Length: 497
Image 1 (tube, one colour):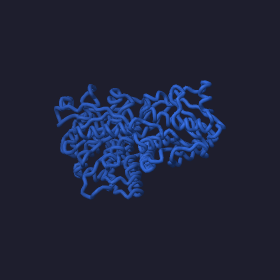
Image 2 (tube, helix red, strand yellow; image 1 turned 120 degrees about the vertical axis):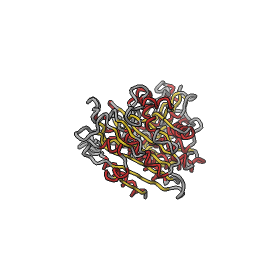
Image 3 (cartoon, one colour; image 1 turned 90 degrees about the vertical axis):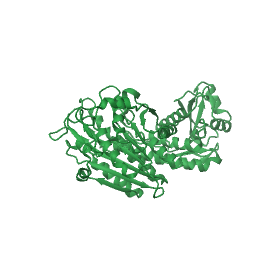
Image 4 (cartoon, helix red, strand yellow; image 1 turned 60 degrees about the vertical axis):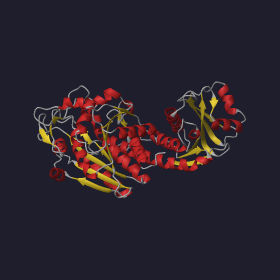
């Protein structure tokens, strides 16, 4: 789909469809009121007959509206004007896109980008509209021999803004497209089957990004990891025939000596639980256990597209977690890259074992901040459901930065505790500590485990087990938290507003 920006739509301008908003109760938005004046009260008359109240997530198509200059006018319900905020704005755009997809319209003009949304500026409104539009049009059909659901006919979408907002809107368009492209990449990788999206496939994706955006890529193989001493990571890989990969992708857009932001993504391309085998029900969804890695690659793609003036390093430890004669056993003790020893009580708590070596590895970059992203614990799903990702941090300023980026990007997080008292649950009689602390506070003790390897830098951990994918009829990867990560990088680069 092609996107463009124009100053506020002029009634009578040619378009396949013009989209305008209606608040409760039958109150026309400014753009809808302009259309109504050009149509000599036609829209007001339709509303007066009770055809639409303006409730949120409703829409009404009108044909041959006099003076509109379009084949169709689509009215979208906005709900209460007093309560119209960021969430309602995104929902209205999504509602419009769903309605447009049900028609043969190839080009449309969206006036919703001119609506007042709290204190959000045109750049934010345009970016969010582009992201919502791309999300609504996303289809994963790569593995189908025949596509049953046709692609939406819509090919061109014009976003209208006030004339004075042109430059800011253009920046929003660039940002929205970059985030949308990064999110789509993350969704595609997550949705691929595990026999296709292997650690080697993730390494190849990183190489492609490096080639396209002039980044530096390094892929460590098993012998490299053995020489370094990444034995907790390799303990997870022992049962798999697929070779593990340790992927480092560097975007050097800032000053040479500026400390980088490092993103670390859990890349378990399939998780059986290992010897601590998972129950069969819904095990197929464990292909999504690499969504942290996918989100890092998606954020790196977005940073590359926008040529962010910032040094960003993406790190992806990637492996399968499989049972087998060589697989790690519950009770085994392994030494991490940091030198600390870990008693593995549960081989299904494998994500933290690959991330801890990655966190030690990134010390060499003397990072300004490190964020790891992982589908780490089912306990986080119980705690927060599928709305907010869990946020843990060892630095208050970094936690506030991540939370602010989450609010701006509409990719919510919820701060969780990280107190020393929880570390007691990880005690081991035989090693420095264990890899699990029991069922109570499972998401917290997992974060506490990682915190033991993040003492030399500012660090945040995002547990995305509840937000990285959906189950049921809408089953598939969501691409979260690519919007949050990209907004965080934009803010760090001074381009967040």
